[in-house]
Image 1: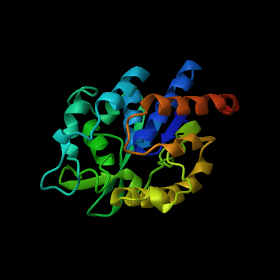
Image 2: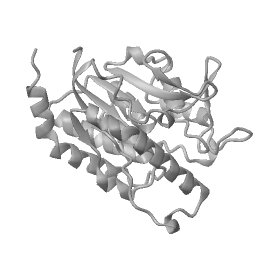
Image 3: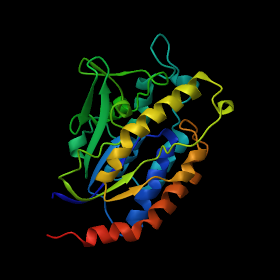
Length: 261
């Protein structure tokens, strides 16, 4: 294997902040992640980590760079938020011209090719373009164009990209941050809420069989109480991920200790 420890991050909007807590707990224990796979907001967390940003810097991004601002509204495009207007925020964390292959750690980012209806795995090329592509959630964000192709959220086809890490990593830790919970119709009072619920159902059922491809699997149930597009609870969500990782550290260390080289 090329790498000892790899992690897989699902999408989940603001709930992906829990993955920052997981990375913080691993680093506190002296466990460095060498290879990452991510979708949507999970890809953003993975990229910020792979670029060497501190936990505080990643939390600052989610607290202060909210995409849901009037200045980012879309006009004449299919989506509420113009994805292209998020580029300047990313440039503050990733220098212009940054490529995926130039990062300190191996990174895979998924996106959905909208017109050709197929999964695309970005492992080289423009980092910011790939991040905008994977985060382009339909109805909420406008599609992203790269080299004449149009992309939307990678989670539509693969919200848990573990396949790319198999055969590369001795130990794979999975972090799925969109656990399903029981709802009643009073909680689905808007078109956006219904659409979000439908996507979460499809993504969970498409992802859960992949959980068994991970050596250690984290799926914090406490995230059920947080909405994907609500960034008011960054620190709380971070703490949930941190606690979940701490409770699994023994299992992760045992998996690493079992490696035969």
